[in-house]
Length: 160
Image 1 (cartoon, rainbow, N blue to C red):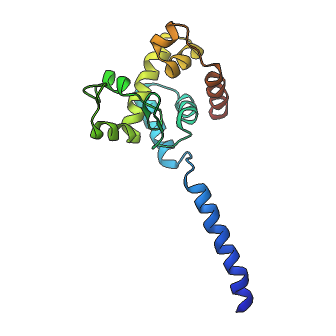
Image 2 (image 1 turned 30 degrees about the horizontal axis):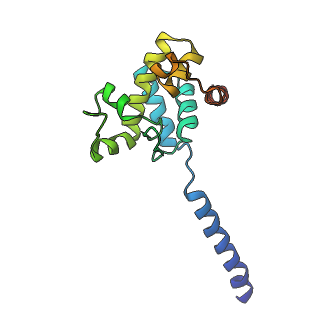
Image 3 (image 1 turned 120 degrees about the horizontal axis):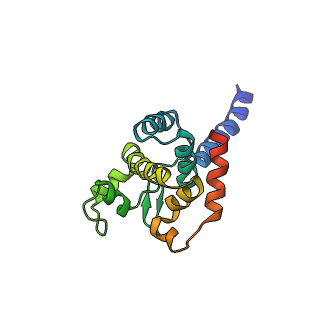
C-alpha cells in the first residue's frame, strides 16, 4: 500500500501539471472539423483553406482575441468585417453581445468563410490570403505579410 502511495502521488502531480500546461492550448476538435465541413459547403470554400486560415489566425482557439485590431475568435473577425456581413450594427462601438456573437464558432466561420469566398472568387490564392490578413484596402496600399502567407500555404498543404 505504501509503495502505491509513493508511486501514485508523483503520478497525480504529473497529471495535474500536464493538464494545467495543456489547458490553455487550443486545438482542432471534432466539432470544429465538422463545422469547417459544413461552412465549406455553405460558402464554397475549400475545407483545407478554412482550416489553414483558422490555424494561422487563432490555432483553433475560439476565444482568441487580438487587441490590436481588435479581432475575435477562430478566424479573427473584426467588427468592421462583421458589420459588412450584417452581424454587427456599428463597427466602431460594438456591444458586448455583438462581440460575444463573434466568439461563437458558427457565426465566426460564417463571416470568415463569406469573406474568403468573396476573395477567392475574385483573386488568385496568394492575393486572397494576403487580403484576408491585411484587408483589401491594406493590400491595395501595398501592405503585405509574407510570413502569414507562407504559414497559410504550409498549413493548406498539410490539410489538402
